[in-house]
Image 1 (spheres, rainbow, N blue to C red):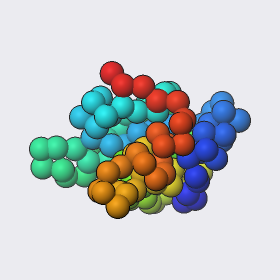
Image 2: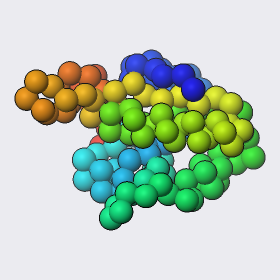
Image 3: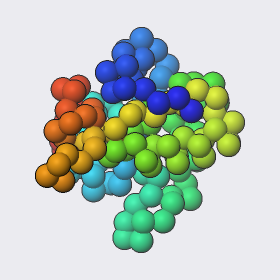
Image 4: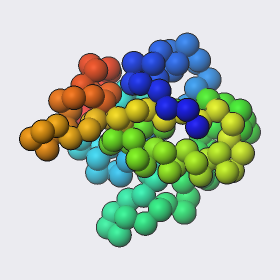
Length: 130
């Protein structure tokens, strides 16, 4: 799995029409915090118990079609869930898996706030809120 800066991940998505962009955060994060424009939602884990989604791989396979060589770009809040989800995809035969460094909201700053130091939103990349 390769990790890309948000701007580089956005470039890859623009250059590769076959790339699949997956937001693997919880449904509540996806809906209420916002999400990158064009990202499909397949939660890696979700509430109320935050267990790993047993249907994650199946959900990604459904979106990817029969191609395990299709580029898959994963994003979560800060990068940790994307790493775990990406490793699971690679174990299942997906060969081009990328994670977005610092995720959608980025790392905590000195005041324990996100969206201020790095991440998709901090870099001003396209996103929307439902």
